[in-house]
Length: 184
Image 1 (tube, rainbow, N blue to C red):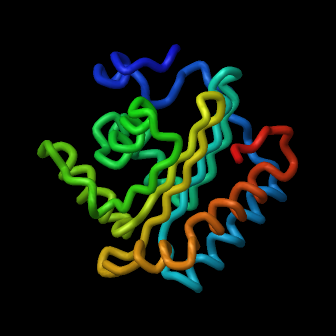
Image 2 (image 1 turned 60 degrees about the vertical axis):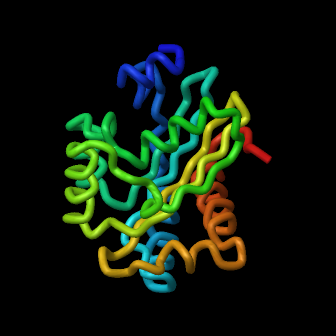
C-alpha cells in the first residue's frame, strides 16, 4: 500500500499490511525492557513505544512496553481514530521532518477519540509525549506515557533535550543488531 493523504483521510493507512515487522532478538527485547524499567524508576514512565520503519522496503521494528494496550489499539483498529496517531500521521504530509507532540495538547474532536483517550488511561497511560522524525525514506517515532495523575511528566521529558536522549538510547538498543540506516 502506498501512503497517500487520501488513504489517511479514509482511514485506510495505519499499519501497512505489507510491512515486514522484524521480531526483536531476545537480547534486544531484554535490553529495551531493562531501559524501560530505568525510565519508569527515574521519570515515572508507564509506557514506551518505539517504531522504526523503512518506508521503501516496508521493514519495520516495533517495541512496546505494554502489549495488552498495543493489542487493543492495533488489533481492534482503535488506532484509526486515535487522536495522537492522527496528529502524528498528519505531520507526515505537512512537510515537517520532525515533530514533538505533547499528548495533552492534542484535542479530541470526536466522541470516539475521547473514548480512546479514556480507554488508554485505564491502562495508566496518559500525560505523555511523542516525537516523530521522517526523511521520506525512514520514519521513526517514540511515545512515552505516564501515570494518569502525573500532569508534568511531559515537561520533565522535554527538559535538557531528554526526549532526544531517550530516543537515541532506544534507537541504539533496538537497532544494534539490525542493519538499518539511521535518520540524522
